[in-house]
Amino acid sequence: MWLFGRKNKKEETSACCCGGNCNAESMTKAEQTKKEGASIKILGSGCEKCNQLEASTKAALEQLNMDTTIDHITDFTQIAAYGVMTTPALVIDGKVVSYGKVLKADEVIKILHKVRG
Image (cartoon, rainbow, N blue to C red; front, side, top):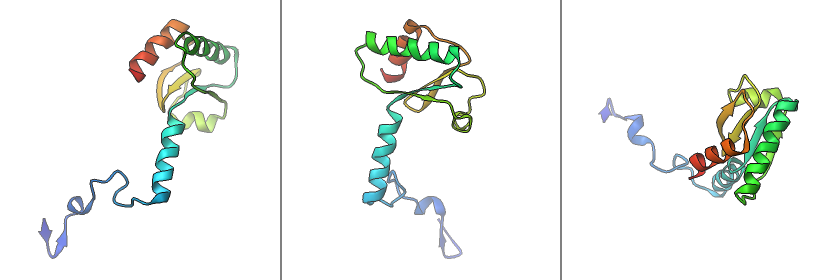
């Protein structure tokens, strides 16, 4: 819509995933983000419950024959960035799927099937 000789900002935006700034740097960054998101993270201080959740997750991955890395995040600023206030928490592909409890291997399997299809 033209209003006083200016285009509406909605009309100016591109349908491109990067807002019209497709270049080698933005594409590399998008690929890196995709790879980083394709992982499993345990958020917690390293306490016994956090370690139990990590062990259950490893057991679930072994049962499913999945080769996915598990990162254990203990830095509270990074944990808070996920919006998690109660640990342990399980993050799959960048989404917090459980927090505040220790899951068993079969529960992790169900969540993996639900999240990854």
